Each structure stands twice: as C-alpha cells, then as structure tokens.
Length: 337
Picture 1 (cartoon, rainbow, N blue to C red):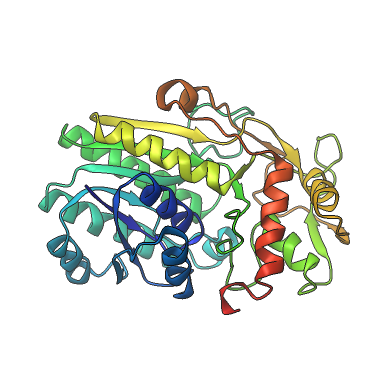
Picture 2: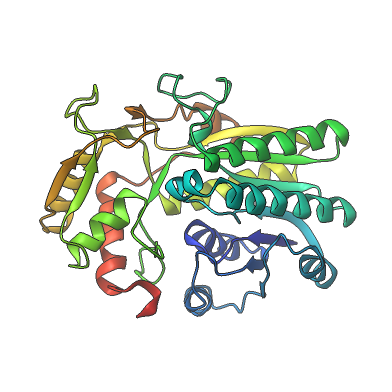
C-alpha cells in the first residue's frame, strides 16, 4: 500500500513520513525544496532505515507529477505541499493562489485519473477567522484574514465539492493549531529559510545566538499576561494524527474536518518561560505592537478527533520546548550543518 506524501521533505511532512514507515506503509515523497532541504532525505533514511522514493516535482507541473502516478501504485495521498508564510501571502497573494490552489487542482485531477480517491489534507486553524470564540469546533463558520488561510479554506471546499460530484472520494481535513517541537533524535526539525514566521524557531534561534532577542507581537490582548494565546502541539503528535486520519480515510468514504491540537492555550510568554525552565536557557525578548490579523486567543476543541479517530495529543509543552532546543543546538544552522 503506497501513500504519496506531497511536501514530504518539509517540517511536518518529514515527521509524518517517519511515522508512516514505522507503521509499515510504503511511502513516496514529492517535494520541490521550496521550503525544505535535500539533507532531509539523508536524515529520513538514517532514522527509518529505508530509502524512501523521492521525486523533485512542483505539483503545479502536471506532466512531471503524472510520472509519479505512472511509476507508483498509489492508494492515498497526504497533501502538505504549499506555501505557508502568512506575511508573505499578504504581500504576494497571487503567488499563494497560483501555487497552492493550482497545485491542488492538478493533484486532484490526477487522483481522479488514476483512481486514487483518498486524501488527508493539511489544513489550518486559520480557517476559523477572527469572529469565532475559542475553543474552536469543526462546525463553526469559516472565514479567513489572509491569503494563506484563504487557500486552505478554498482547498477544503474543493475537496468537499469533489466528494459531492463523486461519492467514492474520502477525505480528512486536518485543521492544525500551532506545531512545534522536533523528532526526539534531534536529527530532523523545523528549519525555516528566512526570519522565522513561527514562535518556536524564533525562540530557538535566539537561544543558539543567531538572533539577539525575540520580538513578541502584542502585549495588550485580553489574556492573562497580555500576549496572544495559542494551542501548541508537538509535531510528533501531529504526525501520529495523520496516521489515524489516514486509517479512517482508507476505511470509509466522505469528508470530515478534524482539529489537531492539545485543547489547551498557552501565551507567548508562557512558552518563553517553559522553554527557559526546560532548557535552562534565558530568552531575551521585547514587546512590540500587534500584527494585523492576529487574534487574542486560539485553541482547539479536540473531542471530535479523540472520539472519531482515537487520537489525542500526549506531549507536554515542556516536551515540545526540550525537543525544539535539542534539534536547534544539534543543528545551529539547520540542515546546512
């Protein structure tokens, strides 16, 4: 049984590949290295003991992607591939719409053509927008505040509409909250290309001396310490959630959305202090103005994933901080080391 993992050399994709191999699945990776490094494949081989088939392909390129479908007998797709920086999406919306939407359309067209109608999609809690109140449940109305989030919402709709057109399709729409952490080996982790958009790699780059201090955006929110509250989830918990979703998709038809989070909210400063305590490292920070489009509080209601998938997060915020630091101090320059 072969599973195509688009964006499988990326942060969440690479951790999910390890879990898939561990569970005995045959895996095929497609990635164009737009937000990943070739060294990831060496680390995956080291950690899994397997040479996972890899194709350097941008999924917008239909004939190149067709070759992958021709060469492998695929049963399902886990779809991570897509640009993911919120700020960049605001500055370059057409780049995001062109890549994320067109790439998914090409992928789904080929899935239809080759009768591969099972998909686990990497969505996001950004689809809950600005007006819903936490904890977020899967049946809340969707809206977005940036083009990145809009591409996630549109792709969810693409998949819903495809199922209406063809009831043989089966899909899990996984709405991630805030993934952090790294593989416990310290061999794979998050390695952003530029200034990190996410909190934890920013913290670890300060800790390792690459950046002088952490910028905290917003200190006047209606939260216990004024900083934004988010639901941080260990990337390994997230990867295991994909396995559970895949099992469900392979055994059924229909489209369901699932929140993947811990169900707990931690403020930015909570995470900073947890990191300092877990690793005995001081993190200097400065308080800045809010970023447009950021909400005060975001955390998940995770009961649906627990009841329907038999999945729940097991790692603590201290575990997340410890594994993030283990990755960064072992790889100060990421995969370039």
